[in-house]
Length: 114
Length: 108
Image 1: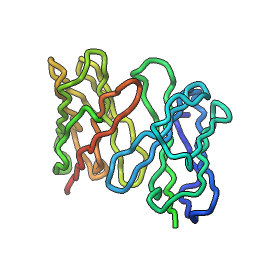
Image 2 (image 1 turned 30 degrees about the vertical axis):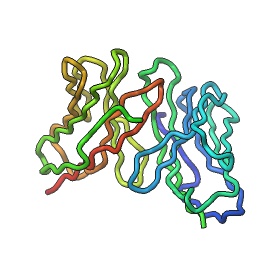
Image 3 (image 1 turned 180 degrees about the vertical axis):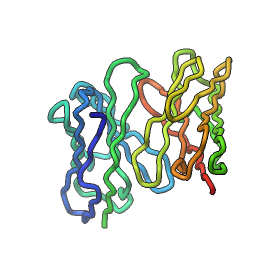
Image 4 (image 1 turned 135 degrees about the vertical axis):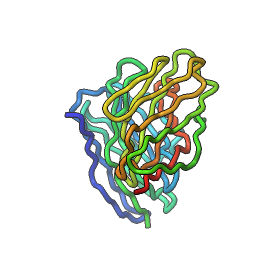
């Protein structure tokens, strides 16, 4: 199984809402990533989890809160977002071994903040 | 910052080879070159990677110059479904730092 799944596919939320994005993998990979991609721009790294511990936070605002409850799941909790946070949110996984190991991406969640 | 530069766009005729160049003149000796592509509104898809030697798989070939300062991704027989943004990436500290990529349009 080489699939990374993300739910929901689309999400519309107001600025006062609390919502969560979910990412799941069953490849036994121990590194998981969140990326943000604005329209017509390349993906930008947000967070990296390694062996279920947060290892990199790319200075992301606290209204984005990641969580890795187990080795197969990665969540991104959203609270008090702004319209400029509307983007495609991508999850990726990597086996966590050598630096050259490949990252596998999910299909993304398209988020719209009203 | 991304360590790669690519042309912003390229066209290719269906059935012909697509050759996508990438410059990475500041690459370090142990840094790998990765290629991903992203079809509109989908997640990036891994294509191929290499360190020094040329590589080939079922999707593409990767040609890396001897000085490792540039590389070329070759899609041997492009189809309409190969229309996508192609990213050449030098992995930095285990992180993929995406540049702007090349938007490849395969035309009938």
